[in-house]
Length: 395
Image (cartoon, rainbow, N blue to C red):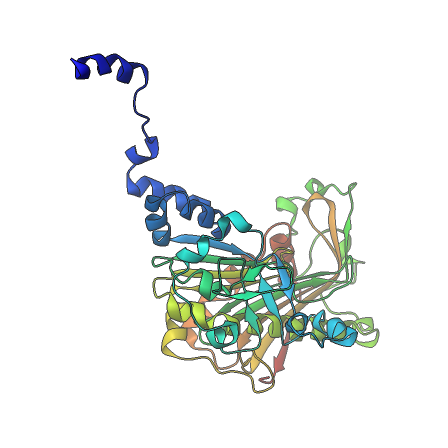
């Protein structure tokens, strides 16, 4: 009788059902892959044991770095001169840190696994990427009580990563306001190619009507681009004499070398992640400013595992090989939607001794897809102008 009497109570107060339990693992993994962000996945990881077991199987991971902490900040003897030097775009001792996972999520430390060597031992270099906070003592704690972890530590227990994107808080190159400088580099065990787009200034001309030009805004003449970027009727795509005398060429050389140093430094720091994650198909290391993008596809990742990189003896970065470069220049370049580039420059770079197979993949298709709009259009317009060839020694 007692069991019969309890039935109405169960009907009135039925046992609660966790509807997540009704979702198959494959669907949850699809959701986690669309989330991607490592912070959010850390939060998901502490929701339940099931989530905790599924998160390591995620294939798509995004790591966003929030701030840069120089090594000097970890030393009690740091001076003001040290701090100013650490803010330099080419400081060779720095630490990148991802913050924002607050105390309730310190259980993420359990997800990160047992204690590993410290940051210097993990990455084996004073120039290292670091991500934090995590949990407990598996990392380094700053004076504010926040524990920081390297990406190697944070990504340690992700066993199935195929697509990894790491985003730095800003570009390494300190440039003046209004100056445009963007680069994209592809690496295997060394530099495969790099393309750099720069301009002395960017002006938004709201009165420009690009539609007045036929053929989608491009001229039919292969050597001359449309609009006031022509300058005058004598413009044949050549670089004006003033470009050599007013410091214009020197500035472009500085842009080129700076971009190559930034790209090779990023490539060097990715070694431990690439070595640990054999399942990677794609790796992108970019920055929130959109200044530079380093890309590695599946073949390039495997090449680095088989053929170790050559490190520069002068700093913690990959050695840049001898290069062949092509340069295009326009004093004034009008783009769609009223964007005007003054002193627009495009530089396409490949190693001098690159294999014929890799060279076939480069050129027009590579240049036209290197940048998002409207800068992709700028690249297409610039390559229609006269080409200048340069060479650069390994450094």
